[in-house]
Length: 395
Ligand code: LRH
Ligand code: MN
Image (cartoon, rainbow, N blue to C red; front, side, top):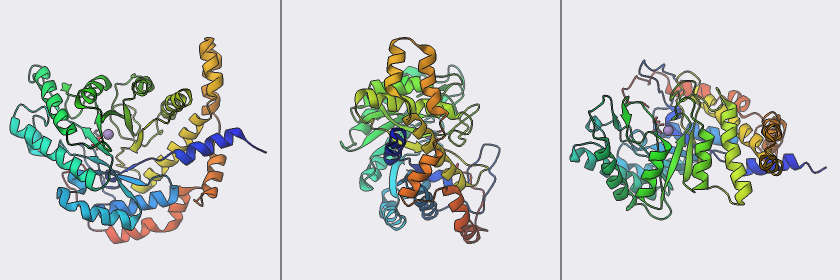
C-alpha cells in the first residue's frame, strides 16, 4: 500500500547530507578549561578516522570540514597528506575554514586591523586557504572573523568596514567559479563592544560587495536571544544568498551544544522554511548543511552521531509539512489551521520510517547502539590514552 508520507521522508533522507567539523572530535572547552577525554582525536588522521565511523554508521556525512591552522598547519604543503587520509577513510575534505583569530598578530583584528601588515597577513592566509580548497576540490571557504572591539570609541567602525570590503573583494578575485565564499556573522565573542560582521544584514552586504561567488552562512548559535532565525533564512533564500549552516544549539549565547538538544522546534522551523521554499519555487536550495559544535562533556563521537540522527529526524518531520494545505490556510489567514499543519508534522514520530530507510540502505537501524557495540571507542581509548595534554589552542 503506497504511503505518500513515508515516500516524502524517504526522498528527504535520500537527499539530506550533513558535514562534520574536524574540531568536534578533539578536546575543546570554554575559557574556564577543558575536560580532557582519552579517546579525543588530536591528529588529523584520528579526526578522519572518527569521521569515517560516523559516516559508515549514518551514511549521510561524506565530508569533513577542516580548520586550516588546526588541520593543515603547513598550509598547502599538507594537501597531499589530507588527500591520502581522505582516500583511506572514505570521507572527502569539506569546507575550508581559515583561522583569522588565533595568531597574536590578530589582537586588533584581521581584515579590519588598523595595522596594514596585519591585514596583509590575514589576506595571505585567506588566499592560501582558497588555494588549499582548490587543491582539495573543496567548494566552500567559510569566513568567520573574530574582529571587533571591546570599548566604545576604540575602533573606527566605518574605516574597518571599508577594509573588510577591500579584502573580501581581493579574496573573491582568487575564487574560481566552482567555489564559494561563505560569510559567517556573529553578534559578539570574543569582541564584546562591537563585532565587524555582527548580523545577517552586515554579512549579506559584505557578500554582495565581495562578488557573485559569495553567500551568507548562518550559524544557529550566532543570534541575539529572541531573534527569529527562520525569518533570516527565508529572506536569504528569497534573495538566493543563503550558502549554508553551522548547526548547533544554545540556551544563552554561542553555547555550541548539540543540535536540537535545547529547542528542536527551532531547527524544524528552519528546515521547514527551506523545504517550503523548494516546494514553492520548484528548485533545490544550494545549501551546505554543516555541524559546528564543541563537545566539552559528551563523548565526542557519540555526540556527533546523536546530532546527525536528530538532524535527520527534524528534516524528515519538516518534509511532512503539507505545503498545499499550508499555502491555502496562509492565503485565507486561517491561523489555527496554518499552525496546525506545522504542528502535525512536528509531532509525527518519523523514527519507524527512518529505521526502514536505514535498513533499506544497509545501515544500522540505530547508529548510536551500533557504535557502542562496535568496540571502536574502547580501541581508540587504548591507542590514544596517555597522549592527551591541555594545549592552549581552542581545538
Ligand atoms: C565561531 C565559529 C566559527 C568556527 C569556530 C570553531 O564561533 O562558529 O564557525 O571557526 O566557531
Ligand atoms: Mn560557526
